[in-house]
Image (cartoon, rainbow, N blue to C red; front, side, top):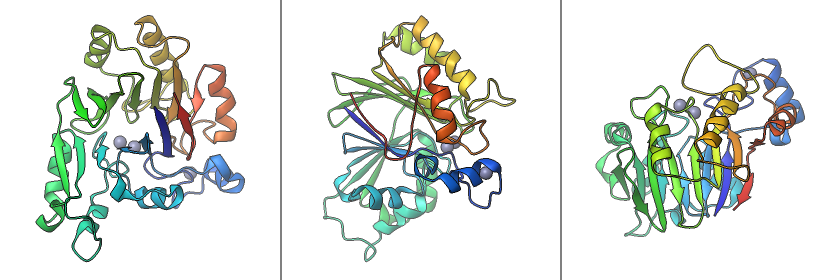
Length: 275
Ligand SMILES: [Zn+2]
Ligand SMILES: [Zn+2]
Ligand SMILES: [Zn+2]
């Protein structure tokens, strides 16, 4: 399996628009891996994770024709993960998809509610929303996918277990250390991950004053529990993702060596991991 990170920032991007903080200034000055667009990933060049407002930019940068993508999993409906405005370009005259082209978008009932409220019928012809329930595996092409409950600010946020029958990935940003139901499910089903990608919105902080995201301290606790539950082992690739400029030491250059000490890889836009 190949996981490619197309974007790795939290909602406002990194550097953030309109921001004059030290982290943003540093990122702009140093460039390279310190520049992060809104979070999105692509599995095996075919399964898209989320549909943020930077989708178009990611396609240009990576030579992706969205017409070649048939399936997209949506984690939750915050606008940095589901940006319905760009789906309006399915409108006749704005794009010329093949008559039978269909983009399948999988997500919680929140996705259906969000998209049906804003999209006209002319647009709906070329994409289908498939509502999935947590803890019930379903097939997407060659993959078995299971949505697990996340701990975040929307009604039904998900993280996803994706397996091709050989390797298994957990793709999980925009969540705090998981809800108890999710821990219990992973343990009961004896899931064993080859790669875990989790939220590190707040960088190197040990703890946070709010719930819904993680920082390095919470990432460490999460990894320890996963090891104790036998969900991962020392060979599992652990990746941190979804960085905010508000995070401590969160420029890639500063954060990468700190994360490494604790057994984590630090994602960057364009990072590719082949399992
Ligand atoms: Zn987000
Ligand atoms: Zn900033
Ligand atoms: Zn969010």
